[in-house]
Image 1 (cartoon, rainbow, N blue to C red):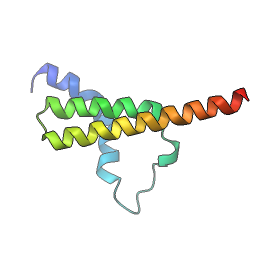
Image 2 (tube, helix red, strand yellow):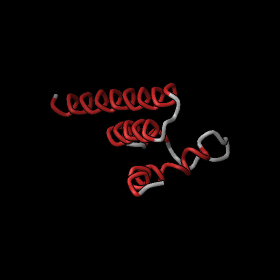
Image 3 (cartoon, helix red, strand yellow):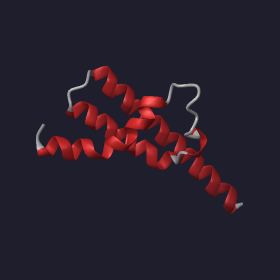
Image 4 (cartoon, rainbow, N blue to C red):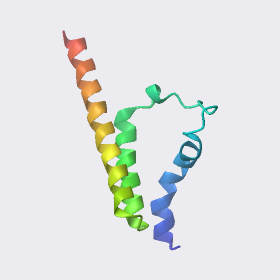
Length: 88
């Protein structure tokens, strides 16, 4: 791996414990409702870029990209609903 590969991969490494344990029923240490969507959406977009960079299958890149898009839309919807509630 080149230095560029490591620089691209480094921001994704903190996600590895989440990916390794998300499906285990006794590992509910991450409250999904408290994860900030406006941060995790672009992080998933970056994850799609990393998957593409390391030549993952196209369907995997597309799944990660679509998850990032849906999380961004959900976060923006919640943000504007919260903002509208505070204005009124």
